[in-house]
Amino acid sequence: MRRLRQLLFSAATLVAACGARAGDLPVIKNRQLLVEGKPFLALGGELHNSSASSPQYMELIWDKLQRMHVRTVIGTVSWEDVEAIEGKYDFAAVDAQIAQAHRRDMRLVLIWFGAFKNASSTYAPSWVRRDLARFPRAVANGQAKEAFTYKGAMPKPVLSVFSPDLMKADCAAFVALMTHLARVDADHRVIMVQVNNEVGLLRDSRDRSPLAEAAWRQPVPSSLTRYLAAHSSQLKPELAEVWTRQGRRMTGTWAEVFGTDWQADEIFMAWHFGRYMEALAADGKKALALPMYTNAWLGPQPGQPTAGLYPSGGPAKRVLDIWKAAAPSLDLLAPDIYLPDAKVPLADYDHAGNPLFVPES
Image (cartoon, rainbow, N blue to C red; front, side, top):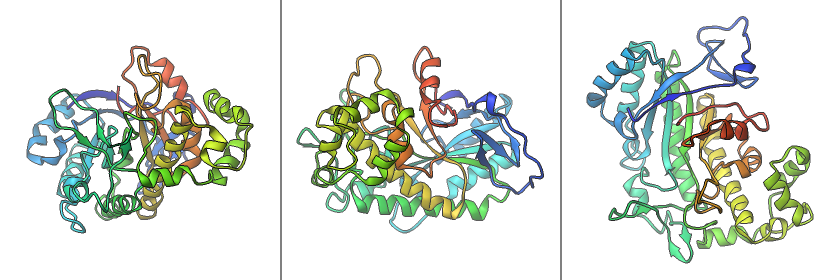
């Protein structure tokens, strides 16, 4: 297990549920997670990124979790493991996690490591990563995008969120996962699903690939500007300032509505990452309507004054309203807190009715 986690929903919003059946799906109502119709506090631990790929390795880990009285485990599902060959799915590692959770009376939150993990694409299948024509890379500062990595390590591939073929393939695999859960998880050991992990773009404030440049020249969707207008008094101040400096325009290209600096780039990337995650969440819920969320690599942080030094387009505090507009099928946006004072990000994400959930700290 990588790190202990405590997963919290706002204690002030606990609600009672009456007349619920044991077979009811987990749901979030009034900012509270309900499991079997009752408020549920998920005191939990998160597995290391790839631990769950080996049920044999996990046996001792499950024993350890049980000794620690963990009631909820954040497990993982890797697209690369699930669909090593396109169109052929293997959910053995998923079934093993569900069986162990059932055996030990635990609950699961599953992370879908799809096309994006920690601002790179290392958990996408090899058939995706090697087909650059079908699944193009993001481009940063004129170069095909490889994510920041440790000195001496191989660079990490970063796929472009603007690729319709990537969204289609990622969505198909995610729907297959949710369909499988609907079939095998009758007593809802899985109570929530995370859609990709700490998405965004590093080393540039926006993707400069041909697909991204074409999208940049398009008009801002009216659904976004209508959302901003309807929530104008409640917007995050950083977003309100960027929109206001351009005259709060309701129509125009991205440059006309938001400008041409890194702040405008971050808004542009946030909308498109949000729409990508919305496609997965909306279609996944058609198969099984579990609560879903996306987590955030926090930014800006000390020494990271501009987007790109932290993942541009991820659900950072400055663009939470963009994500709310782009991805209504996500039940919440969750901060991963690696800061000494947790109260600041907790307050930042207590915004626009967002339920509070901390998957990593």
